[in-house]
Length: 155
Image: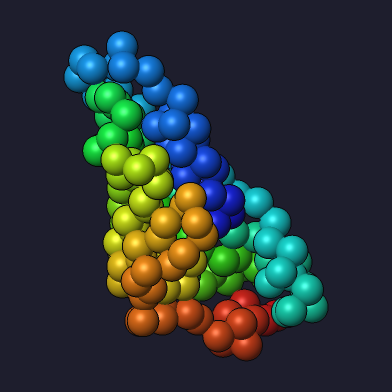
């Protein structure tokens, strides 16, 4: 669930930053969304052999910058807590927190600078979205063993 939200957030910011016109030279636009939902987790359900749901709660904030063709295009911040649930038991997953900053270089390349803890990784990532090149990647894992989650939720 958190992965889907973060991917949608990044897509929205890229679209907003690239599609922005010079008329956006005013103050940045700020959009806040509160997440509080529970959905089945197909991956954990398959791994555990019983239905597992994920409850995600938190906030995502988008800042769409004053865009004149280069520089700051937008930013998203995320703070989402996720809990796996099954058989009347719960397992708290690592919190998804961080920031995505989109910059447009004078040559038109779109650079994504990400810092925080998301997608089971902690640290910083710098990626050139125009070329697909990863310039810096996180080196800390916050990954939780699927076996550990299944054992904690087992009947």
